[in-house]
Image (cartoon, rainbow, N blue to C red; front, side, top):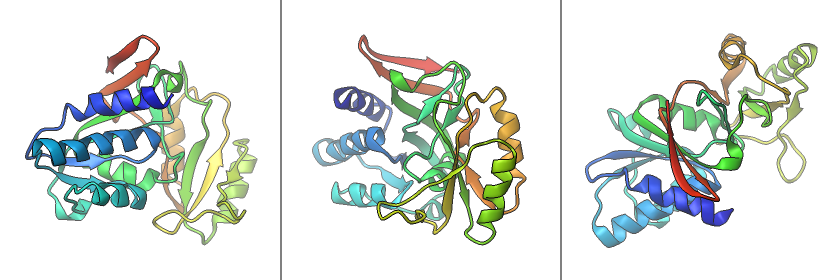
Length: 224
């Protein structure tokens, strides 16, 4: 599995050109992309500016010598490469398994090009095998949790290693929804968007045009 993740990370880094502002994703697969970009900066003289999607990625990129700016310091991002937790046949996706969905979606929104890198185990006909993370402000979060219970979404709190409610980089909580099959991801996204106290959710619908997939038969590219 690690070899597959490394393969797609290296393949995605080929799309990075000097002069670009590059969104650096979060997670175990995206980490290989960041590593390869760092190698190119060091060995090939690649000149880019990185915009990160989490504190973890910021630390990795800084250790590799990748120059960084915040999303507010750039006009736009030329290309963002990130992982995904599940992708359906229409290239809608669920992200946020690493609790970085808010920063990931902000960077993706201001990106001219957006690519996901995954192993083929992340592909599904319809979304639902992976939980849908919902980032909420702490105040009133129990009300939101109960609302999800009444809707039949089987919510659970995202917990830290010490068993307390996990705090995201932006100091919010995450409620994970366990929905067996999401037949209409756009409809669910609209419902979550309209809920007071919800900051963001992990449904990334219609945001990517290209997915680089690694499998037993090598690397292939899916395009919408």
